[in-house]
Each structure stands twice: as C-alpha cells, then as structure tokens.
Image (cartoon, rainbow, N blue to C red; front, side):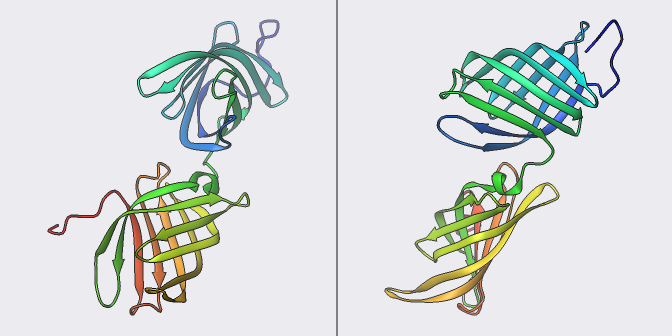
Amino acid sequence: MRQGGKRPEGPRFSGSYEGYTLASSSYFQNMVSAGEIISIAENPDGTASVSFTSATWGEFTIADAQANMSGSLCTLAGSGQARMGMGGNTSSYECSFTAEIKSQSEARMTFEIPAVMGGMKIEFTTGNAPADLLLAGTYAGYTDADCLYFQDRYTDGESMTLTANGDGTVKVVFESASWGTFSVESAAADMDGSYYVFTGSGSVAMGMGESTNSYDFTLNGRTNAAKDDFSIVFNVPAVMGGLTVTLLPGSAPAANE
C-alpha cells in the first residue's frame, strides 16, 4: 500500500464490509449466508489485518495481507487461520485470502480452506444476497387451513422445498398428506425491506379418496433471511368457498389457545 512513504491515490481498504457469502466444497455448491460482516484494518506497515466471524462458518483471521493499488482498485492477498467446526468442537485450519475492493459498498473477497470438506471456498460479496439463492432450502412447520366452512384447521409436520432455478426464480414444491401437492415451476423472487418474498401460481389435485380434481391456486410467500420467520400462503379460490392453506414455522397452537 505504501510506496516510498507515500500512499497511492485511491480508496482506503480499512473499514467494515457488509454482505453475503456463497460457500462451496466437494459436498455442496453455493450455500448462501446473508448478513455477514468482514472487518479490515490497515497495519502500520501498510498491510491489511482481516477479521471475519461468521455464525455459519467460524472465525477467520488474516494478520498481514499484502495490499496493492491499480487505479481505483485495491487488491489484497494473504494467508492466515480459520477456526471451524461443529457445535463446541472446533479446529484451526490454514486458509488463503484474496480481495478486490473498489469501495466499502463494492467489494469481493474469497477465503479458501483446502483441508476442510475436500477443499472449501467461501466467497463474500457486498450487498444483499440474491433472493433466489437465499430462498432455496426446506421450510418446515405446520399449516393453518381456512375456508368458508371451517377456520384454523391445523396440521403439524408439514414441509416445503424451494430450489433456485438459476435465473432469479425458484421452484416450489409443497407435498401435504392433508391438502395435496402444490408445485410452482418458476416463482418470482425479490426483496421487500428486510424480508424476501416469492409469488407464483399453479394447479393442485384435490379431492376425497381416489376421486380428485385439478384446481388453480396462487402462492404468496414471505420469509426472513434466517428462514425462521415465514408465512407461505396457498390460495385455492374454487375449493370450499375459497381455501387458504398457510405454512408457518414451529408447531401448531394448542386447541385451547
């Protein structure tokens, strides 16, 4: 960073960077984690001290990454230690670090840990996580069904899966023993404030016994980044005067609540 005692013109790299990570290894690809923060400070000799503590991946420390300027771009490269593990059992691993920084709102950083899971790479990008990647996963909880003829009919042990299509949309599959199989091939995904939302439509086969009919439905889902606060609503207007099945986290309320 320092050349002949003078700092080259360009952005400073010291600061706190907020964004998301995509992690890949021999066992999985593009596992997303939102709300990540990396702190970088400049050492007296012009190198960079990097600190990254992730609730998902562990603690990463790079003591003296080398810094170079090229126009408005600052690049960092170095090696250090990562403390990773399961539960309270953690181990220390060697890791390498690279970064390309244009500003605190425009930066990309990579941690590589060769000895973990056949070689793990964690890529950090400033900004919000892509909605389709963050939404992907399994949502488990209970359903609350309402229609013209009944209210608050609860079913525990329900779950729904979302899969990123790679084009900004998600595939939604909800298989319920009580209500049928709801499938949306391409639901639109977006952000709404601090929440992620997805909408779509499809058809579901519903009926009694072996006699079923196909009915159109609409889907409206909303979740936080942690996927522990969500409401996913399937609305089937032509069934029982308008049937709504809502998937919610946790267990169904007790009957006397």
